[in-house]
Length: 283
Image (cartoon, rainbow, N blue to C red; front, side, top):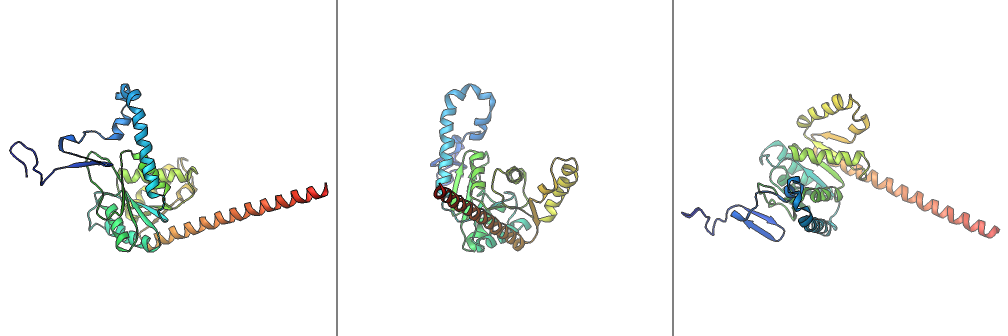
């Protein structure tokens, strides 16, 4: 309800934006985001006076994220559209996926918004798992959904995106828009270039993703911009159980590979020590 002067009364505070411990409402909400102000080259004159403070704020977001998420169990980051309706096929699939991941022992990390993200979070908590939401400051405030157990709100996309990768054993990607595509291709780039330890990228929704995969193979691949091995980084399915099984098996294979490397390293060190000891006695 609004008074004659156009202001909201106390019972209906209107839109609000959260910045850590700070809550902004009504006219106090800025028209731009922190990312926009940081990346806007037209404000170059402010860089020497303001960017030092921005650097500290950015550092604080990394510290907050690392400190909050350091004790997470193995986790899977799930991406998908905030615009999907609760009864849409992708939301139903996301809820099923969240539950299946929880039963397999994984925490579920999403962007904390509505749509597919909320469905995945809800599936996780209803199956007794841990549900994590990493929110972001946007011009259109969404807030963290009610199915999030552990939530962090970020000002900066790049700090938030680091947390999606750092604390995940896999990415599961359902139908979505530009933001979903951004996360998908960043993950593929990081795996392809060896910037992260190999982990699976699963696409759920064959009819939605098949056209993109055809284009990657028939256009990008045919022009030599990617190789056949790059397409093998993607696992496409409509079967939630198959998706989770793929993640579990990839996780186990990587763990076995790392154990084998550790054993080889230990054996090599022991052999070097024996050789050094023998050489010392012979002298």
